[in-house]
Length: 400
View (cartoon, one colour):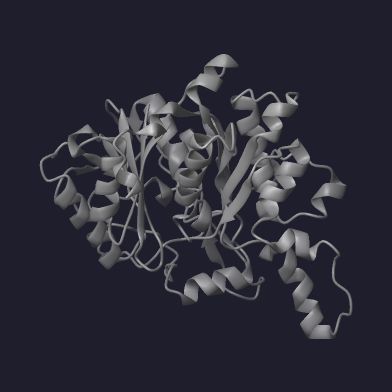
């Protein structure tokens, strides 16, 4: 298996910059403040109109999206593409990527996670088509609708010519994107790669689909790892990273950042966490903090707890939390947001908490669940857990 390579080549590659745009977290500084303060980004939003009960979601205020696009460009794009472009501008700035260098641009790829595509663009088009027999659609429906719209628009806007691909693998989409990005870098197909995810799932159709699948909480509360857990709440946003070799980063004077050292997959969290550790050539006691998947149902939450107890049985100091209780379930972009959380936690040497009351969180069999307030701790290695609707698990191991 790939996770059992004798030498961990992933250590030769680094994140040199990243960008994020979520509700109440339109940049890295605002996002970290959201993670640490005692509030969430959720609000009531009348998705189905004023005559229907509101939905509790984490929706971004338009003025917080620094996309840099013209009104003409905005008319052609779905919201998830706009969010992806906003995050891309941040990552290009923080990584100091030289867009004037044609050779580097031509060898820079784009690998992104997305599940729900451009339904925010197409739903307003389809509704009158079926209701009143409208005879024409916007000419931009096709290009705005597909999940691949972000990679296409970003490549055109910034002149990036490397291999591009979009992954639709539910909440573990970004894990697959990181996996292939590292393979393409190691094979020399790319010299750098934009990796991440973007979702804008707060539409009537997508919301109903998520609710009918059992993914969302009917109570309007997101309470993972409690006895009241009944599902998650939707959020929207994007996060992207610049991934490149440490040698190239040093050559062009970029800041060496965190490293994705392990990517483990499995039929359960025991397998995915162990495979991630094996690929990174680390043991359980090397891990300081776990970002929980926070599916938000009792069976899934307890299954993750039990897996942690099995893998980390000899590591009672392990810390864990579910930061997405602040900003919601971002579906195909979830692991991208979690990776930003991990990068910031490594930088700040602090564990962001689960948003909950300490009295309601069920304690894990092993370790400490950080709740309510951040916890200072020496952090060198962080695991990020993700799980799809079919139970397949993927774990990233990120190190400073």
